Amino acid sequence: MIRSYAAGFIFTTSLPPTVVAGARAAIKILRSEEGRILRRKQQENVKYLKQQLKAHGFPVENTPSHIIPIRVGNPANCTQVSDTLLREKGHYVQAINYPTVRPGEEKLRLAPTPHHTKAMIDTFVQDLLEVWVSIKLPLKCSSNIETNFKNGETTETNLWVLAG
Image 1 (spheres, rainbow, N blue to C red):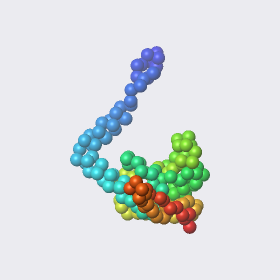
Image 2: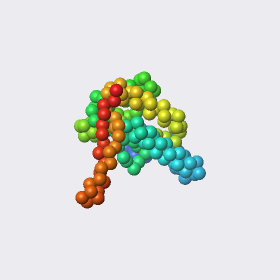
Image 3: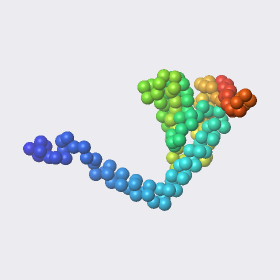
């Protein structure tokens, strides 16, 4: 009888009290000075990681969010990089493959936190570079800025090389 008529037992859409308590605590932190410090630190880490990845030639996609996508373009390679980073280097990086993205647009999804240090980021970039080179994925070696003198527009041509 209790089972059939208990309002919170069947057909409920309410959140469990523990989830509500966790959400309330998170909002409290976000509204505090601690939250402002954490957001600023995360933004600094995102900027630093993007700079390091680009400096090493990784095909980083520009996005306005804290999520940093690195284009791989092949599902097997994408999964191999992700698996190798976890198994051999201890870094969890999400591989994004079809059907989440279109075939040929496979990418790695990086999400730095405010708790990562510059040393951790530097180690990660070196480990990613080692794995990337080991499976012969291309790196962007330089940019060539060209100017179209006819209409004054500037275009950027990226030169790619195979790593290794």
